[in-house]
Image (cartoon, rainbow, N blue to C red):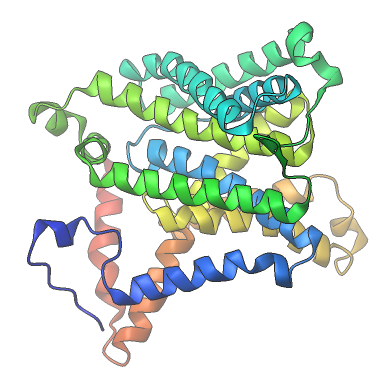
Length: 358
């Protein structure tokens, strides 16, 4: 098992803990850069969707996983970014400018939604964000002069100062660049005092306030940053789909996004990407085994929703730290074998039980 002894503060806040992390992350980045040479257009489209959902998931993870504020209306921010991008792209505005506008508008909406977070939390905040998502979906459907209403809106191709990303590979590279920048931005934010304040609020609001952390400011900031990332994801989503309508940004989309970060592993950046892979791969897996099941089950309506719900309940009950938590346990077992003992995580479980009782 590898131990890293930290002897300085710079070492504590480094992006990579040791050389092994730098090697494997570098290898992963090289593999992603080489993806157009070993994947077809369909594979690249699926990979682009994973990257787009990862950007949105980074924002939601920052809000739910690191600040402890759950949102069940996050698709509204995704939709705001998508509609801003669609209108500005149609006007010929270059992508760097239009995506910045999408992020700023979504962040402004996030500030408005973040205000109720100053007075409510837990299930009540979830209900407030759910109501906000329903209101925004209705606005998208009713404001026909801007959004096209239920008839939807076509989205022009992505262009950056004259260069058009009109192929699956070129659009994939744009998504990859945005994802890398978003990931580095979130990682640096978490290393900064702002990120430490988010974590302190999540762990104990009373303790954070007693340490001088302004709850109102940081909670609103968390909503704004989270919404801005969702807006960037929405801008890319609009170009990937090339057609947007209100039903794409409803409650189902919001639940899918929340499902992504919970199953991936709350409080973990790795969990965002694992959750995005799950969100894209699960429908493909269900479609692959559908024909092998009895007709009464395979052709039943709502099969996908049932499987999603069952997986979510299983993770909440047996692995609350999600896919990344399971991977950490497997890695620990491999590193410590044959000295691994089943009771290693007993303290963690007893903490969760006390939290439930409380």
